[in-house]
Length: 530
Image (cartoon, rainbow, N blue to C red):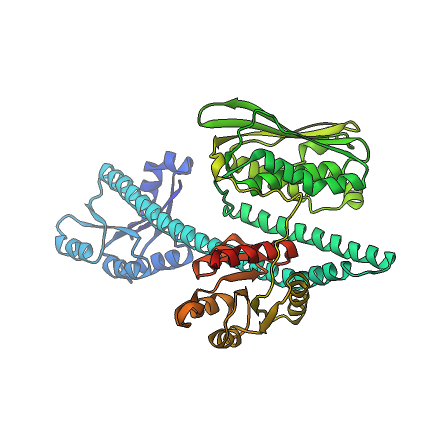
């Protein structure tokens, strides 16, 4: 590190002596000396170039003496290291200089061994001070960067939360009204057009979910559940959800669960199903003829742990080595032609890879162009308790019969009011439905009328769903304060759904929702109430 030193002295021979003494360190770039003959010249140099490590100044000089210069230097920058030089017997001035902030002193005539020792010591001390200042600045900057990053992440999450709500709210009305129209006896062309709307809506929901998942993964906020579930049932669910897509393309879709799989394992069935849905869905999308096979193999099993390999194979278009190299990159597609033909966000495999890694596995792929592709991964699961399983198979959904109930719906969006009213009236015989456009209006209705269940929108004017729920639980008297409340939220972020439970709601459903899911949840809450 270059050390710049300013020598302030009116002796004409001193400059030559110092340059001669330190010629090697000057030549090597370790030291650089500047010279001034009085305090005024020295201040001019300091103001022009304040990057001096040290200032050596004589005390007795014309125009501005060393003591005055020392005071000026201390005002400019207390970090400056100043060495005063004076006659041996001039201890009074030396004492004054030390009181004014001088770091050290030398006496004349100058002993150059002492000069070099003092110079070295002072530079070391100066460098320590600079390192400390830099470390403090770096710490402050790091703290500011962290705060800015956290604030940026907070804004990003809030933006995604708002966008999720703003997009899902109209989608809920679109999906609800489309499903209602599909139940009517329409012409073939009208039925076909409505099916296009329905499928397009479902595709848009998938895209929104992908973006939200990717955001949570990047923020490190995506966590896996650990519950008992059936691996065979999870695979069966994937088959039931995708077999119609395979049938549309006249593809054979097979599932081959290992008969030795444990009846129950502990993990996140939703996220495992999401990975398998992504992989199998991609295979169906990119396969024009032949088959898609979802297979599981039990790799090993102990009393407590089972390691399972999952694989999805197809006879589709396959990939080139170049395409394989970037298959897990965000927003990546095999080619522009592939994107134009098959669509998609290009996030599915990236999300799947991250989810598999959260499970402790590694998603891999092997493929030959024109011959098909296989995605596979292994993950270890603690063996679960079969008695804790609840059947979640969606192949055949039994819609509960609900009749003669009174529901209070909190919903400020007119289109969603109409959609919810038609869905509920078509599914529940003897339904009495009251609608409140905001929290205050609904609170007043609940004070004066008995209801079997409350369906609560979250983002409402005047009083939102959270505040309304807290108000109901705290201020409503008697049994009405314990009425089942289900959130109908257009916000799919986990933090939001968790908050629903924390403020006193009993369940939630995310918009846009399947009518069957809504009825199942209503039935469960009604049975729990009884």
